[in-house]
Amino acid sequence: MSVLSISKAIREGLHEEMIRDENVIVLGEDMAIMGSVFGITQGFLEEFGEWRVIDTPISEAGFTGIAVGAAMRGLRPVVEWMYNDFITCCLDPVMNQAAKLRYMTGGQITIPVVFRAPMGAGRRNAGQHSQCLEALFTHIPGLKVVCPSTAKDAKGLIKSSIRDNDPVVFLEHKLLYAKKEEVPDEKDFLIPLGQADIKKAGTDVTIITWSRQVYFALDASKELEKLGINVEILDLRTLVPLDFEAIKTSVSKTHNVVIVEEGVKRGGIGAEISAKITEELFDELDSPAYRVAGLNIVSPFSPALEDEGFPQVKDIIDAVRRLLNK
Image 1 (tube, rainbow, N blue to C red):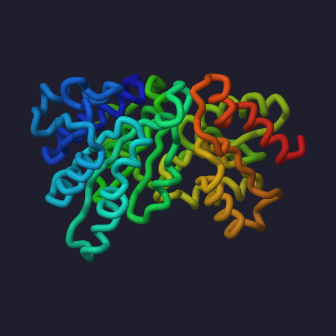
Image 2: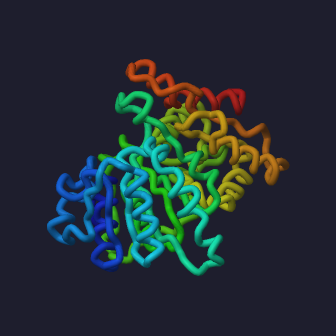
């Protein structure tokens, strides 16, 4: 076991896969000489060469399309969008090509491409560099969507994503890159896509969440314990495929559920999960599923305003207390 930050864990997982499979390549803006904006590919150019570590022009549509084509020809590209907000520049090759071509060719080709992207608010990057757009990706059939919250999860999931034969969107919260924990050293350490994880066991209410909000939920649970409320925290880890069996098991135990997401509330993943719980687990609920999510606003530049725009610990505490009438 080694103690790694999330950024180092992603780097280690990617590095191991590039050694394991010469078809794995990385490309994007500042990926080679600079080693990527957040340092994920530092040293890769010297080790693997310019044919496998590729600096691209500032053209997301261009290098995303190149990656999809390369995947069709048998390579396993790992693309880095500098921010997930820039999906707007390259939605066609992702939505209409990568996500659909395996089905439209009757399985004759696969698209084993990973789209990595930092996401999230909290760094005062304003409206065009602070969004959580995972709900957009989950609405596109054919894409898998991964949102790790810990270093161990990040390493196991990036390796599984690279080995997957379908396109995967791998979203990394910018404010989690420095989070550290012990990570297995095994070269074949994998975490299957579609497998949620209980970050804290509890009996009174289930908090379903992912990415940075896992830590907000953990902090909220400590305060709620003082009020005699025992919280279970379920980290989804992957949004597509969704581990609904884990949700079912937890909600059937606690009979109360709060879904927490940083993305905006309108049309969010919380709404989808809430609807599915209501449809399939209605008789297990003591109260309606409750959502805590970002406001339906453009992310402000002002620190004070930005922090009011997405869920804080106090919002989770208030939601749980309101749900349980405590």
